[in-house]
Amino acid sequence: MTWGNENQRPDLDGGSEDLKLIPAWSVVLSLIVFAGIQALSFWPHPNQPQMHHGNPVMHVIGSYSWGAALASYVLLIGYISRDVKRRNMSPGIWMLIVLVMPGGIGAVVYFLLRQPMMSRCPSCRTEVASGFHFCPQCQFQMKPVCGQCFRGVHITDVFCVQCGHDLTKDEMPARLRSYSD
Ligand SMILES: [Zn+2]
Ligand SMILES: [Zn+2]
Image (cartoon, rainbow, N blue to C red):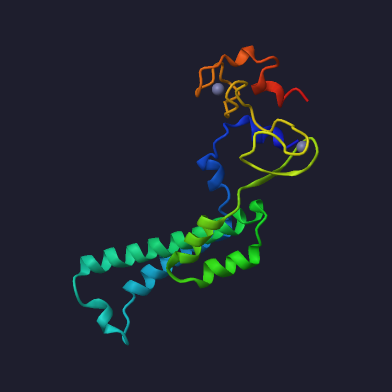
């Protein structure tokens, strides 16, 4: 069962988990884009001599920052192409918006409007937004919570970090209930 691993890590979305969402093709593509920008910028262009006058240091900084900006945009597009799927959003429409809107505006719009991540209730298979503590259909406990304030706790906590409640006193320790099935 895959949901067990999901629950074992802390209830915050880990950054390393997010990094795994960047597909290999976009990493490769971003390296190519970065290298390509450097090559274009430093290659002697007989037709474009205006590329090479001015301060050479500024030229280096300029081409590096352009390369880095475009390369990270490619990584971002790769990330969104996977992130969009785990949120039950339409990949076609969102990839189009992100690619067509200039200067990363599409990506900003995406991060403002994206839906919460969806996961399935292990008990009844209902689709549940990942922030929920309980399944709205069958009350299955999706995350360990404090029995007093019902805010999320870590599976290893003995006391609630929000209200100080002794988690071992919960009739059946709430933080462990999701593992008893
Ligand atoms: Zn359920
Ligand atoms: Zn509490």
